[in-house]
Each structure stands twice: as structure tokens, then as C-alpha cells.
Image (cartoon, rainbow, N blue to C red; front, top):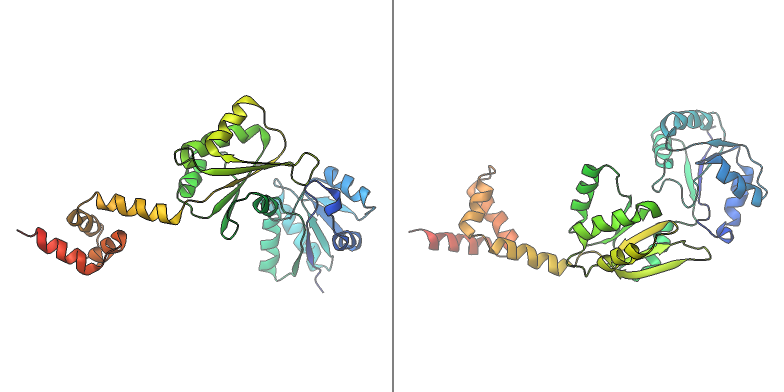
Length: 285
């Protein structure tokens, strides 16, 4: 019988957040796969957990996942932990879980600390709808593509950032998402630790703050989503700056027939197709 992969959330700062269920799981597992065995050894020693460990990290995630899947097939129960927080969230554990799912191996998750959810609840921003982007890509082209997609995002946006990259990321957010400087952001640092801090401000003011001081600790950035009403008004205003005839022609030039082009133009402008037809008839000499 195949074993079970158990995803075990570990504290993001405060060791008191380690649940008894996860301690028991780690004690009873046949093997613990850890992102950094040196860091994890300190955690395991604190809770007197002596289960054998193996490394599973970003640089061996594909090859090692295949090895771990084979061990699971052979009946071993494996616990997966990351350096801090919930495995598979901005974490190589995602690859292992996918491979187990493809192989029909049982995966279970033992819930616990997760930095993005902790920050979201502290942010003071809308928590009903949100999008988690993790760390922005370091490659400039890919990074710009992600920021472009986020420019008109109406859900609350959550990002992770390291202290040595924070200033650059805030500058990019100002350039792409600030909306004239008034867009709200909550910078959450050192979550669950002694010096936990939540800075609720705007993107522009955050840039100014860190021009004068150096960032310290790991950050979760929670950014206000765009107002649906404002976005809709902007979109309609953009189309209204174009004549109806040009609007319909634009869609016809993409290969749509006139009927479909009129339908799309009507949807863009928030009017009926009949209104579009009437306007076009009026323009006919």
C-alpha cells in the first residue's frame, strides 16, 4: 500500500503557532522532506522530533520529487515542511503535490501558519476577494508583464518581498499601480514575531518612507484593488472618445462581421445594439 504525503505548516515566526497535530505527524512520519535541513533541524530539536530528514528545495524539486514519489509508492509516509509557513505556497512543494496527484498518491494538508493570509487579515483592506502573486519575477520583461496584468485588478493583491528588494518593488508599484498616489497598501513585516509591524499607507508614501530608512525583515505587501465603478467609468470614457463608426470599424478590421462588431461596441459602451445601429444610420449621408 502506498504511503501518504502530509503537508505540514510550520511557524512563520512564533514557535507557539506549531500545532500539536503537526508535532505528532512529524514524530510519526517515516521521513521529513525539508526545504533547508539546517533551519528545520533547529525547529525539530525544539520539539524533540527525531525523524530522519532529506532536503527538498527549489534546485532539486523535480529530480527529488521523483525520488520521494517512489518512496511513497513503497509505503513510506512522508511529511513535507518549508522554511516557514504552509508548503506548496510560493514553494517547490507545489511540484511534489502535482506529481503525487498525477500518480494517484494520497496527499493531505495539516493547516497552520500562512503569511499571506495572516497579512491579509491585518491589512484593513478588502478580504472578500483577493489574488496572491507571491514574489514578483526578477526578470524585467516578465515582471513588467505581471505588473501590467495587475494594473486594473479589482481584487486585493498580495505580494511577498525580501527586504533587499523592497525599494525596487515599491518603485515599480508606484510606476504601474499607484493611480496618482492614492492607492492604499499595507506593508506587513516580521509577522507573529516580537517586532511585528503593519504599515497602512499609500504606495507613494511607502516609497518616501523607505527612501529615508532601510527595510528590515520579510514583507508581505497587501495592495488595494481598483474600484469596479471607477474602472467601468474609465473604460466607457475611453470608448466615448472614439466615434461609434470608428468603434464598429475597429472590430470589423479584426475579422468580425458587422453584426458582431456592433454587438461588441454596444457592450463596450454599456448601450444596446439598437442604439449603435441608430447612431450608424444617423451618420449615413
